[in-house]
Length: 362
Ligand code: SAM
Ligand code: SF4
Image (cartoon, rainbow, N blue to C red; front, side, top):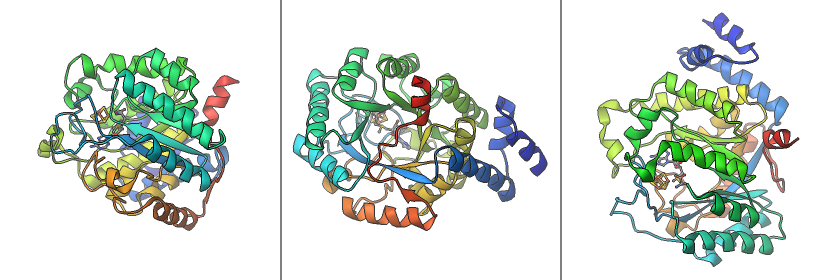
């Protein structure tokens, strides 16, 4: 088996069957061969540097009802909030002063003009208060092309919109089948983001009920075919107040979700060497060293949470979200420690743009 793995890893491009074989490895030795290859590719292409994106969870108000997500509209147990302009600008200024190259503004999906204009105002205000030195990523769901263009014009440079799964049938097992949760519209939104000039990130959840290894191989093929610049993906984790968490018999064992997540990061790095890949918080939820393991599997981005603690507690997508009680300063200190522990360094004051995006532009 080890010989087959090594032979596949020498190929320029992986077929779907290759990806399935690599994602199906069972022995720790075979897995390590794949992770080592990914780390070598990472070191050569993007270096052993970690880019920080300060995460600001703008609002937990959401108009959608994704079956997996703790802040879905129908979860009446959630106390809803939206951060004030001052709170957002304060968190962004903290990131800037700490030497983070960039921030991510993430939120439940809201399409009202009031909300989309609020985001636009935030972009302008943050840039003016931080000397235009922060790169801003948005993760604000599906919007019209006009809204995407207006946010791009107001100074957002990157956008994250996960496809969640590329299996059409599975997509409708984890979302209501209606106009508000259309698979086709999600793909169209990703294309619109590209045409609006963003560096575009997407990703999937790993270990969903009924998800197969073949589905995950198809996800990797999709990322490459779509010329994606960034990937944010991680294990699916249950939230007890959501419909998907009741499918107990279909849940993957947690350690399997973790292991396959690391393999997905590694294979994404090997097949798309110049993209940015995040080591997700969901990895840390399963394993105390999850973020480090993600970096060692080929990820190069970490997103420390800068949301004010009282609101952070209300933005729970899944159970056991980590760092709920840590203020921003503390989470930066602990991050610095875990990054130096694995022999990597934080790229302070660098935007850390996706090389793939620059290569695409060239
Ligand atoms: N509302 C926007 C959207 O859906 O694109 C952005 C915020 S949404 C909370 C960000 C991501 O959280 C989703 O794309 C989804 O993959 C992830 N997420 C939600 N619930 C999750 C869960 N139970 N386990 C793992 N990831 C989850
Ligand atoms: Fe809303 Fe995003 Fe959660 Fe879906 S994943 S319910 S769109 S916040």
